[in-house]
Length: 294
Figure: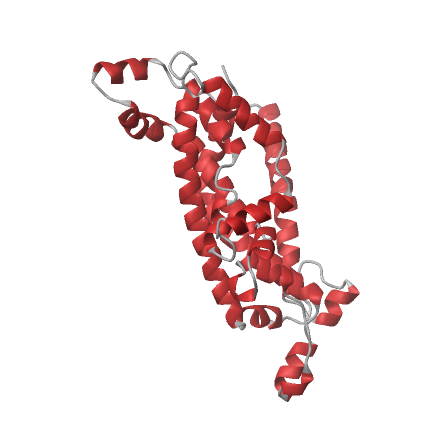
């Protein structure tokens, strides 16, 4: 590769670097501001004095959230939900996408099932029938209600289908000549070649299960069964001075829903920010190859 060293190319490189640094700063700024507010004192946050650095630096909001026993219980429920949900979605969407990526000659009902999938993507049965169904089959107030309710994201299935359809057909012919059946072709050929799109939809699933709070609110009976996002969503500052020591009352009085909400948001973002760098290299590749049909 020959790199230009003219003045115009250098000016372009510097300009591009400045623009990228500006975009990166604009992306990081909201996260930094949220962290600064969560570490600030109540009066400074309410007065709008917090900008790029905490005012009245303290960990009161985080101590209030983490110090609650229900926080760790909900955190564990969310971990279970993410692990089970990502695993089930990975298996089900992959097994569904493979036969749907075949031609109608190979799978005669292929077009019928594709239309059914598209219909469910555009329409749903409604909140009340969905709730009644979950309760009728005995999933209410269990981890399976949170996991199985969104276990088959149709958008993810379509991404994987299109990715499989873009793989060379000669792979199928070579595998058939060697005596491979559909299961072996899926496991040994298609899944390894589809790592980019599978990593992408897995990231989608992880983010969905980690951030979703409404199902936990509707499908569980109380705080002991809430996932983390539902617990954080319902968490507010309530001061009951009857059973408090002087130090506890002082610390609670220094809290506000504004600083507490900022702490909630930052805690909620942290796991996704940790996981994303490991999957982001597959993200664009998986989306572009899985979204365009030849």
